Image (tube, rainbow, N blue to C red):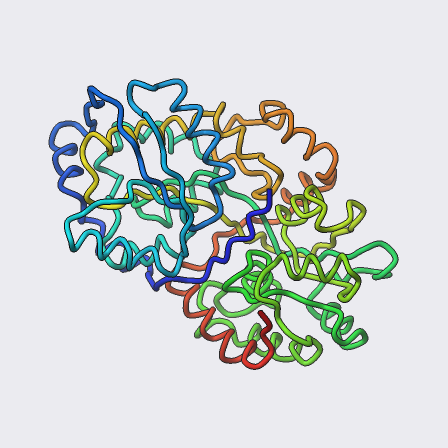
Length: 404
């Protein structure tokens, strides 16, 4: 199933702001910390309300339903719903101001997570609940641990991967795919209107492409789009001369590739596998990588709003622990969207459900393991800098060339 969820940044945060908020926690969190960090499980099952603003339900729901089946004495039901990353913070803020807690879990990217941290809306899980969750996060793979650290204790990483930047094309349309930014620029100039990437705020591959350029171009500071991206902004402006418009999402670029209106698009490992698996793009599509690249990681988080009852919080914590077990993490292979997917160590494709194994066998690429191991994986911009980058891109690059 495709997860073409628009992750438009919902607010700005930074590491300094996260650190400033590090002492904040819910009343339940303070109580738990004072009693050893572990809440007692409820004596009767609870119902949880979950909102997904990152497109991770397709991965998380089977994990949650398996927990509900295993532990009906704790979890009676989960009401799954979807929301907008740009609106979830204001919704939580209104509920908490009114003293009414209607959302117990949120599946989010670093955009809405950042907005919630900025406004003090999330329960700080660490160190308050380290006794319950510490062992689980200790099993993170290095990349997942890096992304977990960015959350500064306010959320856990459920799945991660979806590395980019990559380019994708159909056989026979591109003789030799570009392997450097200079080659891509020359190719785009020779084939005007044939290269495409989607608006970065709405597209994982678009974000990966733009965030990957500072590393490829040798910019001053790849993590600072304001003071450190002079080469990148200049390059994007040059490249933009040969781009007709920027679609509003990744699916549009995949459709354009499939119907032949574009010959080369930005992609990522997960989008490459998933779009071919669900038939959006022909199975025979090819990918190309940039020499000396850095892989931009992506992830989905589980965050807990402030104000939920101790009974519900106890179940949520136990559920998160369950979701981070190797058996449940094997479900994160899914249909390849977050490739590889699992965030903890010791999970192999052979442990995945049969359907996921079939997807990886039929649509995975044998070159991916070596290719992804060849270059370093780096964290995305902080939510604060990501928001700044989106604004700068909109103003300097997208301007009049966006299309819904």
